Length: 99
Image (cartoon, rainbow, N blue to C red; front, side):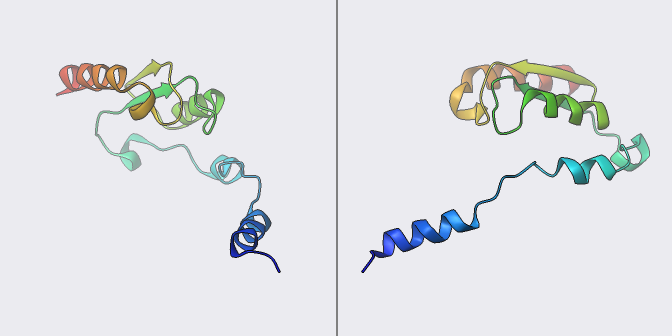
C-alpha cells in the first residue's frame, strides 16, 4: 500500500505540463495603443537572470507594449527577495523621475 504522500506526488506529476507562458496566445493580440492602454507612465524593469520569464520574452513584451523607459536589474524572477536593495533604488529613481 502506498503512502498518501506518494499518491499526492503521483497526482501532481500527472498534472504537470510544459508551459510556453502563453506566447502563442500573445502573438495573436494587437499591440496596445496609447488610447487602449491608457496614459499612465510605464517603466519596465527587466530582470536579466530570470529563468521563469526569460530576457528575450521580457524584451518582446516591452516591444509589444510600449513603455517610457526600460531599466535592468541583474536578478532572478523574485527580485524583491534576491536583490531588494537594488529594487528599492530602482523604484525610488522611477518615482523621483515620474512623480
